[in-house]
Amino acid sequence: AAEGAQVTLVCLTHGGAGGPPEVRAQEIARSAQILGAQLELWDYPDGGLAHSDAWEIVGRLVEVIRRIHPQVVLTFGPNQLSEHPDHVIAGWLTTLAFELAGNCARWPGSLPAYAPAKLYFSIDPDTAQHIAPCCLSVVNVAAYLDRRLAALECHESQRQCWEGFLRGRAPHGLWREYFQLAACRTALPAGPEADLFEGVFDTAPVGMTMIAPPPKESPIWLFDLDNTLYSASVGLMEAISARIDEFIGTRLNLPPALAQAVREAYNGQYGSSVRGVLRHCQVDAGDFLDFIHDLPLEHYLSPDAPLAELLAALPGRKYLFTNALADYARRALRALGVEQHFDEVFDIHFAGLEGKPSPAVYEKVLAALGHPAGACWFVEDSATNLVPAKALGCRTVWLTADGAPRQAYVEHVIHDLAELREVAQGRPEKRERRDGEQR
Image (cartoon, rainbow, N blue to C red; front, side, top):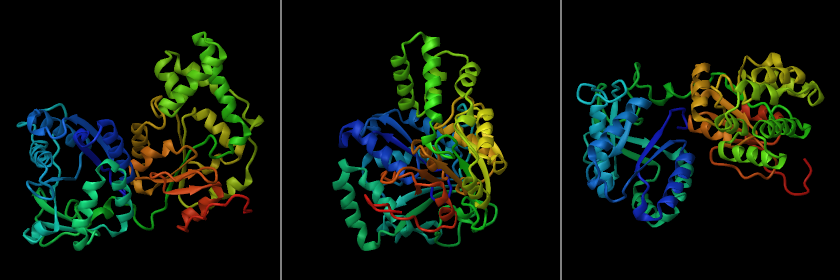
């Protein structure tokens, strides 16, 4: 995930036998977020996979494989790493799905056939000693130990289990992970692999370097507009919120206080009040969007020379990604004196009226850019809007006030856009300012 690959974690159960299902679900969701994985959490009974409909599970796994097109599939092997019956059964069913996903004659389904290149079983160090060299992978994960431990810490209800696992693994070194190549549609490697993607691409060995951006590739910058390119203190977003309240109140015949409550509820539920209104209020999208963005921007914004200088100095191409209308966004850029620095505006219409933070919209933007996710830097004042970006493998920069706690999906925290110079140059972040301390 850190190198730009899309990682999808499919968990067949909520783990309710090891604690309240809602607690276990929250734990795995936080853990997946830290790891940069997209989570698919299913609801088969914990400890009861043996009594579930095996063919139904296989069918769902086949659909996942055909939908996300993974090059590599990881799962449990029989009696390896864990003898938990659910783990063993999950491994069997995933192995079967791996074989069937590429064959519509054997499993028609609703999506075209897709055959992943490799299937791996996760194994322990002792088992690794008995695996043929050509089927063994030993991956150095030293650079990700902090993230791994942070992900484990999320599973508070399972602390005893994973602490025991770490104690047992410690003598062998926590910085190595072991895998057995269980099935392969590429040439069999000559010896032990150090990367699960070896041999997957046309030129070998290439590994993840084909997914991560080349070291010298210029970054791609995706900027939010409102409260990011200009300060929240100018009051423009408050004016837009007031226009939304007015529209809701007039069209739905609601008093002002209730219209405001509706807007705030939609913002909390969807991360954007605009998304909520368009989804539930049965209003004409064009009328609504035109009305809320019909503001005299010159009353709020003025040419920003330091911003223009910063954008000119940042290497790479710049794009605007906003839930606003493109016309409004370009008027705002012109008012700030920076329109010439942006190659394109991805607006609410480009997003199919869905907008941030819908993951599908981020995927559409990345597809339009045509660059690896790892080359793209998202700059946002809303931490929520950075979650899908990080999950897809993008670099994330959160513009926020001093003292705000860092979120797991935030790679860089800045308090002023000028700090992007240091971010672009790979310099370490400045420490937080203490109370009363001058800059």
